[in-house]
Every structure is written in C-alpha cells, then in structure tokens.
Length: 264
Length: 186
Image (cartoon, rainbow over all chains, first blue to last red; front, side, top):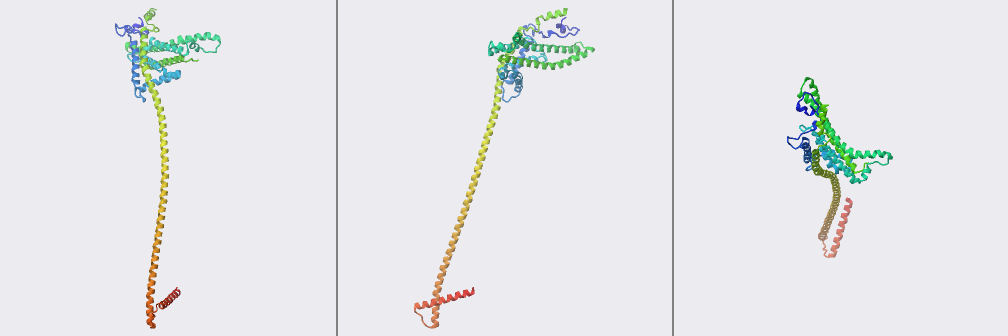
C-alpha cells in the first residue's frame, strides 16, 4: 500500500501525494519509454515561446503594434532588469541567450498551473541541469578566453590578504565557483518547482478527496480549506514561477559577466 | 516500516535528483530550438529595429532642429526683404513727391511767364494802339483846327511849316490846360 496506488486502488484512507507525482509512464501504451508528458510539454514550451516571439518580432516595426508591444515589454524587462545590472555595455551581445533562458524557463514553470498540462517541466532536474550546465560552460569558456588560462584562476582570488587566509579562501572560492554555483543554479529552480507542485497537488487533493471522493460532514470544512488554499497558493506559485525564471536568468547574467571580466 | 521500505523501493528508479538521460537530450533540444529561433533570428531583428528607432528619434530631433533653423533663416530673410521693400517704397514716394513738386513749380513758372508775356503783349498793343490813335487824332485835330482857325481869322495859312508850328503850339496849350485841369481835379 504505497502512495502510488492511492488513486488507483481507491483506498478509504486519505494519503498525501508523494514522489509518484513526478513519475510518468510512456504517453500511450507500447510507446517509446522516453515519450512522456514532461518531454512532450518541454518541447511544446519551446514551440510556444518560438511561436509567440515569431508573431511579435518576425517583422519588427519602428512603431510597435500589437504583439510587438508585448514582446518588447518582455525584451525591455530582460534587458533592463536582468542583463544591464550585471553585463552593462555587454548587454546586447548576451540578450539572445538571456531572452531564451528566461522565457523558456518561465513557460516551463507556468505549465504548472495551465489546466490539463498542470506540470512544471523544471521540476524534473534534467531540464534545469541542462540550462545550468550550458551557462556554466559558457562562463568557464569566456573566463579562459577573455582573462587567460592562468589569470582567470588568479583573478577570482582577492589580493593583499594575510597568507593563512588563502589556505581557507582559495579552496572555498574554487569550490563555490566551479562546483557549487552550477549545482545551486540548477537545484534552486528545480527545488522550487518541485516543492510548489507538491504543495499544490497536496491541497487540491485534500479538496478533491473530502468534497468529492469521500464527502463526509466532518470532512467538508477540511475540503473547503483545501480548495481555498489551492487557489491562494496558485497565485503564489504564479509569482514564484516568474521569480525563479527571473532569478535563473539573472544568475546566468552574473556568471557570464564573471567570465567576461575579473570581479575584483 | 514495510510501507517506508516499499516506497523507497518504488522510487529507487526515480530519484528526483537523478536526471533521466532522455530528458537531458530533450532539454538540450528545446533550448537549442529557442536559442536558434528566438536568440539567433528574432532578437537580432528586434535589436536592429530598436537601434533604428533610436536613430529615427534622434535623427528626427536633429531634422526638426534643422527645419526650425531653416524656417528662422527664411523668416529673417523675409523680414529683411520686407524692410528693404519698405525703404525702397519710401524712397520712391519721396522721389515722386519731389518730382511732383518740381512739376508743379515748373508749371507755375511757365504759367507766370505766359501770363507776364500776355500782359506785356497786351501793354505793347495798347501802347501801339494809343500811339496810333494819338497820331491820327493829332493829325485830324491839326487839320480841323487849322481849318477852323483859317475860317475864324480869315487868313489862309498855306505855309506848311507855319501851320504845324501853330498846331503844335495849340496842342501844347491844350495839353497843359488838360494837365492843370487834372491837377485841380485831383
């Protein structure tokens, strides 16, 4: 009797949803193992992003009209809030990457609250990991290329400190730049989406269970609270989805700038 | 215990921190698609348009400034022309006035000269007529008075020289008499 069988077995006892929320069988019986719901909607999100921006920017006008206005709001937001504070004069060069990152992640995240889809793609670690690794490789490549293979590693260590400090500082600095940074970059997005989906699923299941599945007089209030909290948390999730996409893109801009020029 | 163990067993294949290899591929593919379409094609287009827009706005400002400058220039030119035209007009007017005055003066002079000439001519004619009248009167009076005197004294005064002397004397008498009369009257 594990959580996986809760819905299928129709047990009498309420059981909170667990990790089985994130497991998907092939889309149809006998289909290839890799063709699952997250895979389909991961690609679908990229198609939606491309389609929207094609609609907006395919033939950009000097005087924007319709979709171009909306697209430009997105572009200005990424440029002014994400790219400029870190990249400064290098902003334009890196806008294609940051736009792609921000909007792909945002759409992936938003799928958590789109009816029928209802699954945040980034809650499967593979997707954030791919993006974080990409940014990581760009960062290291730029560092080696722009600052030189030796200088890149010496630049990130602050100078003029007492010698013993370096025994502590150097490992921490390298560890954080080359191992922890890309890891947290990916995990931060993954964990937020993962937890958000879990919580939403829990409260919506509470509402569904106590109002429809096993309606009882005692359980009615609990079910109502579940529905209300689900609605409120959906609003909160919308904010978090945006925030995490923003944060991911912002960190990407920061890492790239750290590769382009020495921080200290 | 049993439940926990079975949960773990069920999830062993699906540890959420272990990425599915096929999802890595799909993630790369999705990101690549977005990077190509949005990053390589669309964002550069928008950036070009934004640059053009900035240029258009700045160029528009410069053009507006130029147009204003030109308008100011034209206005200045127009004002200068107007001023010149006004000066010219006043010059013309003054010239015309001078000319008019001159014409009037000339006409006046001419008229005066004409009038003077007419008056002189008239005087001359009158004088001539008076002389003529005087002469014929003198001759007539001479013959008449001689005749009269001849008749009165009965002597024939045929001698011409004497005759005219007598007549002259007589006339002078007459004249002096008329003059004294005039003096008395006045």
